[in-house]
Image (cartoon, rainbow, N blue to C red; front, top):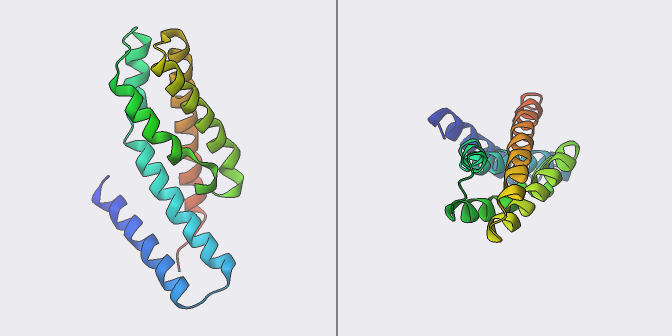
Length: 140
């Protein structure tokens, strides 16, 4: 995460705390907290090298280390961490990650290839959509 991104996360967290301290209407607090959770979830998912994993599996290389990365990424794709409009996309990513985890655990290379590719694509789509959604919101 770049220092600029870390600064943005810090600003979002501070805004959430300030809104709660002011006892703002729950909708404003909810909006701020959704921004914070979406940013943190996307940053956590960015730590999983989906591109590299997809390439390695495409070459027929099934590595045990992928299981832990995928397993830890599944909760970060939970729909509740994202705005309502992006929840179906997050749910789809989470389904592909869960299927990828199962394929990796069972050493099913063909299924792992398919699910890795789908998870990689869904991740990028969600990443793009979250950034678009965030650009339409401004923190107070």
